[in-house]
Image (cartoon, rainbow, N blue to C red):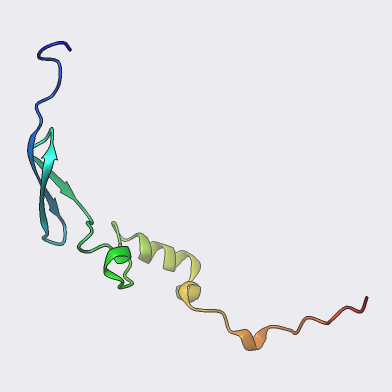
Length: 84
């Protein structure tokens, strides 16, 4: 292996937007992230929208606020049965 061509591997601090701080190893000394396992909905079990720069509001403005609501089943017509 050639000498002095690989980056130095050392302690790395990962800081999340929620305030959580994790320590790991890496080639950088500090990494800033937006979401981590402490605040991600998959790991916490709580539903929340991760809104980056107003994207959810733009989507709701474009497609309407009822997009995330469940459809009303009373408006569906019954499907007629076919005889074989």
